[in-house]
Amino acid sequence: MISAYKAVKSGYQVAIMAPTAILASQHLESFEAVLSKYNIKSQLLIGSITKKKKEEILQKLENGEIDILIGTHALLEENVRFRNLGLVVTDEQHRFGVRQRGIIASKGENPDVLVMTATPIPRTLALILYGDLDISIIDELPPNRKKIDTFAVTKAMEQRVNNFIKKQIDEGRQAYIVCPLVEENEEINAKSVLELTEKYKNEVFSEYKVEYLHGKMKPKEKDEIMRKFKDKQIDILISTTVIEVGVNVPNASIMIVENAERFGLAQLHQLRGRVGRGEYQSYCILKYQGNSEVIRQRMKIMQETNDGFIIAGKDLELRGSGEFFGTKQHGLPEFKIANLFEDMPILKSIQSLAIKIEQEDPKLELEKNEKLNKLIQKKFINRIEI
Image 1 (cartoon, one colour):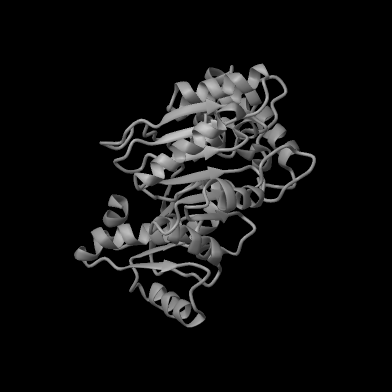
Image 2: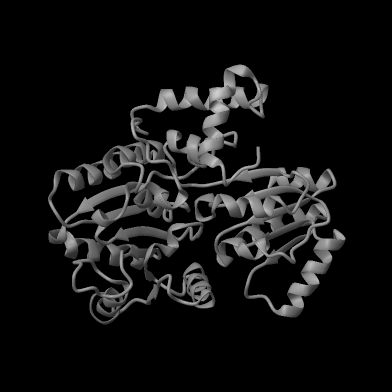
């Protein structure tokens, strides 16, 4: 917000992109509350606005009447044109591709770019995924936030967990219950959202307001459910990981994760971050099945630390880089010799060396870089112009 203020006061416009409509709307509320008194005009652009309203926004944007445009992927569309874009912010960057980051940045003349993610990426991975950026790390909680108590439990504790949920709701709090699947699947012994909602609505928590949310629902439906949860019209929200990012419900104090053994550690950490956002003591309960050493280790890590970077490092150590963060889709290199976890110092020095070479000889014309030039031409012959 401070960066956006500075950019606007320097004569530029700002684009802020978030992965969901509800998160974009929350940002708009926060920005307007602070910046409107400085005569800074913020506007929301999401898929669900009417055609007429959208045309009006695009017109004002091009005329420079809108200072800050906050929105979803809708910002990437071709007809979104800024008069003078100076700052681009992507929130929850891990939900966007590098290419999308590039599209939004290309709407201005070399604007400043700020990308944010709460998913703690092991620093080594960050060097590779975001090697073109300066990396800043905020590794402390905002003031007055209480540490979230985390417990890993087996089926034997189910009744106690349910009683605990009831106690919290009776005190005025709300709960999330996250499942790995949407529909019941015979082959996998994992609780599904729809099956669990049925059971909890009619049997276990029949006296409370229980609703469900999953990725296959229409965006409008999802936003409506989240709004109701935020407005305390829902006590228990049963969901898939669609609630993993950027939903701020300070009154929610319990996060239950069903079949926690099926989630990555970084993902569990991200889910845990949905609670503990208000003044109330919050709890994360990981219900797991299976007794393997790896499962036990992973549950132990979650109970012992709230430090996302330690968790992310452990995730990398236990699962390997391919699975981390869906990195296979990111085209991350499968190293033949290096190990992302163990060889971090080497990767760091290689990165600084690459930057140095690029600065002193960007076209690789010096004699000492001749072999490197040939190698790059051979590897990327169809993809770059040299």
